[in-house]
Amino acid sequence: MFNTIDDLEPGQRLLVRFDLNAPVEDGTVQDNRRFARHAETLRELLEAGHAVAVLAHQGRPGRDTFVSLEQHAEILADHLDRDVDFVADTFGEDALAAIDGLEGGEVLVLENARMCDEELPEEEPEVKADTEFVQTLATEFDAYVNDAYSAAHRSHASLVGFPRVMDAYAGRVMEQEYTANSSIQEREFDGTVTMALGGTKAEDLIPVIEGVDDTVDRFCLGGIVGELFLRAAGHDVGYDVEGTDFFDEQWDDQRETIERILEEYEDSLHLANDLAYEGEDDERAEVDVEGLEKETSYLDVGSDTAETYADLVCESEAVFVKGALGVFEDERFADGTVSVLEAIAETDCFSVVGGGDTSRAIEMYGLDEDDFGHVSIAGGAYVRALTGEPLVAVEVLEDAAE
Ligand code: 3PG
Ligand code: MG
Image (cartoon, rainbow, N blue to C red; front, side, top):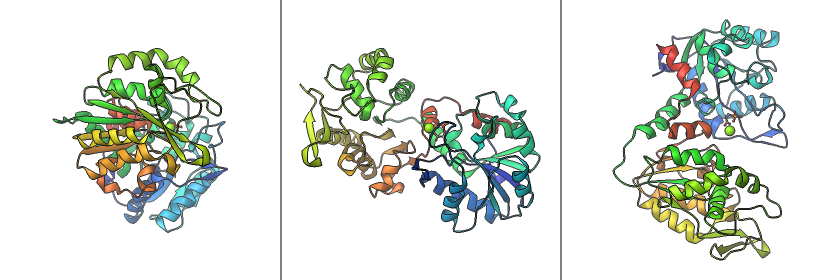
């Protein structure tokens, strides 16, 4: 196990890694659940009198979402209702001068770690620990705190380098997410365990099915992935029509795997029997999958399917959700995703809802987070926890504690 911020000496100078990676629309960073959760860790550290420099990333070079963290500092300031300084530099002279001026109880956000060349290439922690990035910042602080559970599957400098060269602790989000997500692996259930699987990437979800098949008894499929499985089951859906490009490439790449999984897991896979689309007058319309010929894109599972999935949830002792069953951001197509979430909220099953985006449906549709066992802000790291794959940034924290 790792040390946590409960083990910190008082009044420390801390380098704190958050995961503030967020959607960016037309250059504007969108507030999400990650800010609220990390703001709580930050509040606790500042109230304890520590001086905090925040290290985080946004997007990847070459993408539209690759922007400065200046707006992230403002969003954090809103959550904390206090000033949060920002410096447009990560470990150069300007950053070091700003860090130098930090007093106890103050916070400074450093520039996007991915703007530094040494951050991204996936390399061993020892290699990352040796970078100028890590070596320079390490000497400025008493300790390193990693709160970025949702990025803990990445072997990047800011995530795995520091615990090799300085005292390292897990922040509150790291601690809570790690405990909740890894307990899934160790937990045993007497009753039925159901998993709702959706989203857009088949490649990500197939290893989940194979990885959790000891624990999960049945899978309810939806989203793009669900449609690809319907295609494998012989229905005339799951390919690109005008305006979509989600299907054909994935089908070419994943067809054999999808067909194999469908055969192997035949008894535990539930596929939609009806689908929803945008009909004339922009209303939600529905169609049965039997005998269907695809002419349009389907944006949700149909209401019959949504009801069946909700019933399956209600009979379960535990339910996991990964990925949305439809385009829930549009109210007309939220039925599948929200029916499953509502069924979880109404029954007292053990539940975990994962994926930064899927968890957004909880607040969008007025559900109460307290009705869920755990709502994870992680996507990739959550999937790895479900399948029992280790997280490299957690491993280095554990090594540091020894
Ligand atoms: C995420 O948002 O999933 C994490 O911050 C990791 O980001 P990445 O997928 O770009 O590495
Ligand atoms: Mg991601």
